[in-house]
Length: 217
Length: 229
Image (tube, rainbow over the protein chains, first blue to last red):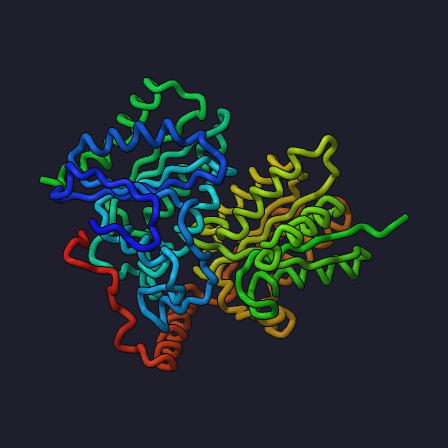
């Protein structure tokens, strides 16, 4: 995987350079917030143990403009955001080129942090403007043949069942709209000890790790 | 006694006067003004600089009613609104005594079904709790693209139920009550059948593509590589 011009903080495991499966981790920590660091460390170690190529992007460290809601990525430059000169195209390219995408985020009012949201909003170019029906609801048709599995790891400042419920629902809705083949959610308290982090990540992410193993085989 | 004050925050990134969120919010705000409230409109896209953000925080702290009208982006609040909500909650957490502000969230989406907005409305409710606002309710609207940034009154029967729902909401807010469920029930009923809405929407995309000379490229996969799974 090449180093990209705008994605300055990218960690790639050189030992997995020839791996056949790829994982993209988007870290949505806000500036000055280090509460995700121990979870990120454990997550990356676990993912690298699978033998896949892991790319970790700290969103707060890269230039990324916000989606302007113009829909030009659907009708004027199909599949590409009109905004060039930032990391947007690189990130959406990395998303669609991955077998697994992991969103690491502080749980923010039950949703993602603004850093994750900025990247997710820019990803609408990955789907078609046209429609399909899923269980009676209208969604967008897929643009690409395959989409990555989706996992979200949310860190909660304090226990909050309502925020957990909303977070899980949001990930399910994203997976539905992006046609992700497999989905997993892990929610951790901000003060979780290392053993709890390791155990919860392993159990919660089992479905997507199984998918990744299948892709690597 | 001074008039009560309502602040509308428009969550769309689109230019002023062109967004559906603004049109919906403006209609509600006009009803509140008719009821005697002082009103102010702020655009989240214009509150990015620190001095503008400070003014936004002051306006909200000094309001009796804070109304958010926003589009749905990827199943949740857009980045700009999420970031603004983070700042508002952090700012209000620092206040020794938080002012009493009531909060109404209105989320519109381009899909015909309003249920797509439920997660974003849930997020708004948690935001209200974290920021110390009094939750007056959430209103979700499907088929928002049919408004095309126009004033709701000019759209006649197409927005009749939407306007009735907003009228009910305004009436309740002016009386100091929470928004009644009947208001959401009115918004939940689509103005046109779902299949007609998506057919019109698809024609709209095709016409836009024709205008841009991209008709044959609408299905392009520019990010696809030999590594794309």
